[in-house]
Picture 1: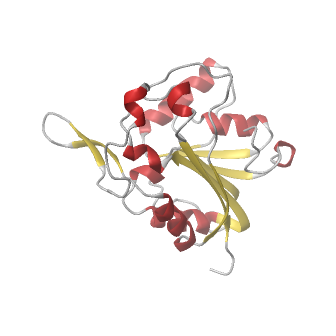
Picture 2: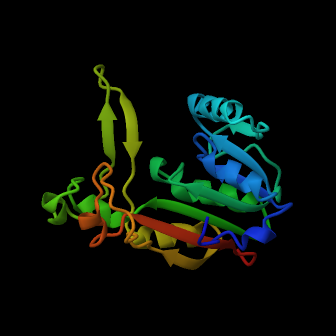
Length: 219
């Protein structure tokens, strides 16, 4: 939010914003607080139920919530001024260009799409916060998806690896211009350890990649 990658906070008021892979709609709630008109979309009904419970717990007005596939957005062309996605949808689809083209379709001319993914370099290193997480253990260029299965062998979690170059080409193929690629540095004040991340690892390896895109009206 502080980076203002969607634009200055004061300019969000009255803007129609689509959050894709919204989860519990944390970003949409922040956008609504700035005066924007967000719509939170997620494939998971359970995640959207979390969003409803959070709004009720905080005594907030409910947001528009939509359960749908990001590759088949149920909106008319040019419905939104802006779109965003925080680690949602794009890492979990085999064809991210399909999603990007759908986002472009529902944006108005000149519309901006900002999305974040776990930084692709993470795939080359073990997911460990200590020194063992600093040595390359796999090929960065191995695009084999990460899959978790249940006891019956059914996939319950699938995440697709794309290199930075892949992501850039996807953005262009999806009908966008890449305005910026932001790789946030680990903040000095953050001494916490979370999952595979820590000040040690975060100070050497980027954990997040944020793509700032604008609808290419020449496409």
